[in-house]
Length: 111
View 1 (cartoon, rainbow, N blue to C red):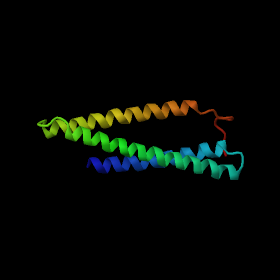
View 2: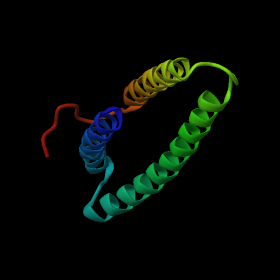
View 3: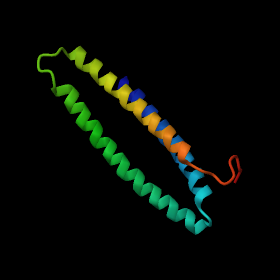
View 4: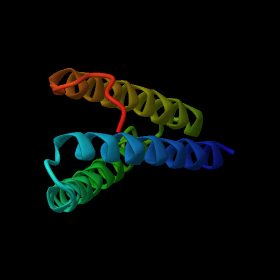
């Protein structure tokens, strides 16, 4: 059940991020040719950050599950949930900080 919920939330996050990325790219692009370039650069950065996140999640999972020797399985599951919560909170804080850095020429403009 946890994996199903995580998959649904990850897909929802991807849809929302894609929509926001398209709006931001359209705002920054001066022409349709610039839009393609901005989108390509954004996709490259997204791929690298996704790979870094996957690597970090694998390392965290291995560390939580292999440390502690005779620690009960329930404690390891709780540690996994705590690590997930902390990393999710850090992700949300980083996203909020990134959004504050955006400077639109015309906020609330409709394209």
